[in-house]
Image (cartoon, rainbow, N blue to C red; front, side, top):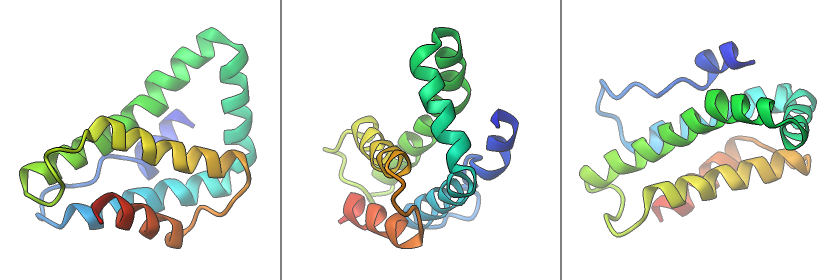
Amino acid sequence: MFDDAENYAAAPSLEDGRDIRVLLEEFLLNIFQYVTANGDMMRALIAAAQHDTAFHSSFYAKFVLPRDKMISDLLRLAQTRGEFSPERDAELVSGFIHGAFWYRLLNRKPLDARFARAIVSDVFG
């Protein structure tokens, strides 16, 4: 799973100068597609991380933290480009984004394009 994450949840390319909203939505869609297809496994891994301290450390370091950093970095870049308010805390907003999709995953709610657009719209609205 950690190796797969490098494919479906790799850092978005910033080379083409596309709007951060588009990059964030694409990033979320890629994650949503994977966790939807592998929802039972992801829920089991999250549960295991609650009971196994060593696994939690590895899961957090190899999967959660890199994705959190990617979103925080995108939001900070959006701030430098004037696309996202400099008064907003990028790390806090990243936590909100992650909380929203982990909550949906754990409660078997849809993780789809509509939800990705709603998150992006709310973050940048």
